Amino acid sequence: METVFSSATASISKLISFTVLLFLLFSCSTFTPTDAYDALDPTGNITIKWDVISWTPDGYVAVVTMYNFQQYRHIQSPGWTLGWTWAKKEVIWSMMGGQTTEQGDCSKYKGNPPHCCKKDPTVVDLLPGTPYNQQIANCCKGGVLNSWVQDPANAASSFQVSVGAAGTTNRTVRVPRNFTLKAPGPGYTCGPAKIVKPTKFITADKRRITQAMMTWNVTCTYSQFLAQKTPTCCVSLSSFYNNTIVSCPTCACGCNNATDPGSCVSEKSSHLASAVRSPGKSTNAPLLQCTSHMCPVRIHWHVKLNYKEYWRVKVTITNFNYAMNYSQWNLVVQHPNFDNLTQLFSFNYKPLTPYAGLNDTAMLWGLKFYNDFLNEAGPLGNVQSELLFRKDASTFTFEKGWAFPRRIYFNGDNCVMPPPDAYPWLPNTGFRPVISLLQPIMTILASCVFLWAYM
Image: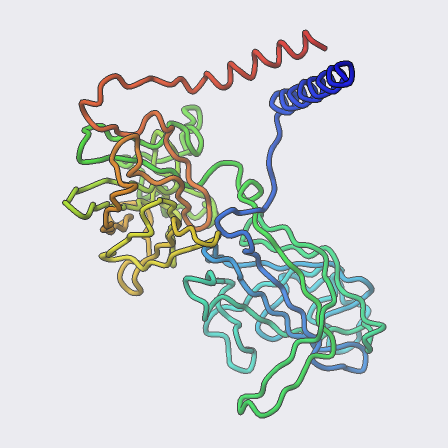
């Protein structure tokens, strides 16, 4: 019996050792995460629905609609770009509510050529003010697609396409492949088209239901790691009980390149006006104000006042990009006291509950026609509001940085937070341990050296 027990104990010890070695191996390796899972919006995606509504002599007419089911991430100007690859030799005879960026080679067609003959067409939305005879419902917004929570009435975008040289029955039609969605840059990854039950449509008088001849869906998910190489925002902190202002981490979104004078512009530069109006600048290329963090946007969280039963926070969003303004901006803030939020003074608010029974995440955005527009860098390039929280005696404290947010998103992108050991602490708290940020790295390096010696 003892022999069996000793053998089992030895086997368990070997299994534990092997698990630890595997963990150390993974710790020593470096990788770039590109997954699109968002813990605060686990089911968020953009769904493209392709409805074949009628047949033509050589193909079909379809309505393509993009639904933004993301709670707080939207597509702003200059808008979305949708592409795909035809399965056969299809062409686009005509479009309404959208247009392709190129016509392609249509030389083999006599008389009236098709709208597009490319194997891989790219479609963009039409601009506001398009003539009514070229519009359909949910079109012509310049490619802007608002988030589901912030503006559900404008969270969909549609266009109509007449496809030729295609199948004329459900059995002969082939779904397009390799869907791509740019907003306007990279970030979205689209899956394959899947044929689903035909969409049903209700007439205006709600007395008749029709349905599409055929429907397929494409799901696109967002990854911040694919969208840009560096973060787009950072967070700074301060409080009434400590004179320390915790700035954004240095080089949080990149570093000021001293060898490249065009990497940023000083706020006091005499050439600022000419740099902003430079015609050679791309509309999407950032023109940042020179800062230590080099982030386009900074969110400042200031613990302002302490009352007997309440406490107050001031939130300020500052734009450091001279070439970009943000309409319909939003913040997502994670803090345990949002369950007791009492009043906001100039922001809209909606609780986000990605997990049942846990109300610690809030979505904030500006009031329409008041502060929903964040201007480009300069004296007017900021918006701010104050939040009043009721104290919960069982959880409330100012100690150990509890009053500061755990995570902040701006327009759906995760912002860089200061290191926890830099947070403003209460005065007269005695010895404050200094935690080196290099300690975990040194521990892993030491483990790696030990592992290689062991192997």
